[in-house]
Image 1 (cartoon, helix red, strand yellow):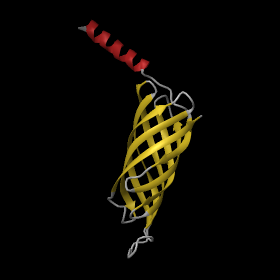
Image 2: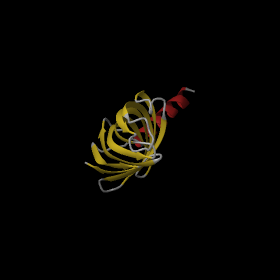
Image 3: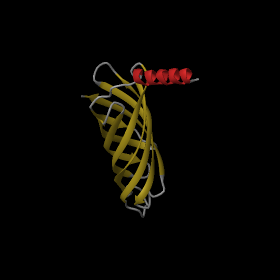
Image 4: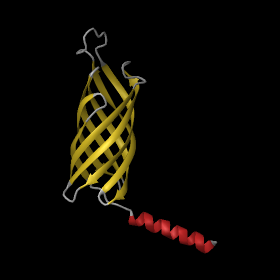
Length: 164
């Protein structure tokens, strides 16, 4: 039984070692998309280890009900799938400012808000210093403007980033 346990441990350790990856130190690009309108973000990623990174996005959202500027920060874990494909997941949050003044008969004119966010996605790392990603980022309004408190937004985005 000890031999079987030791052999299993060695195989698992070897598998994790073989699947270890190296993500780029920096990546800069765009993340486009939103759940009910259009959004564009300048996106920056900084590696924090061989399988962890920080992503910071600064962008603008234009939906049916509001327009907003947002700053989001996410801590992500990156895992290989096969070949140049990776999947990742993370947690974070951010803050923003919304404007409802473009909606007719609206009594709400906007304000500041804070939100929590999760993140899950898949990415393809080309042999050139380019990476494409598709991710899902649910965001929950936590504090601030009443129009965003306790509001859940399902943000879907397509990212293109230059790695250096």
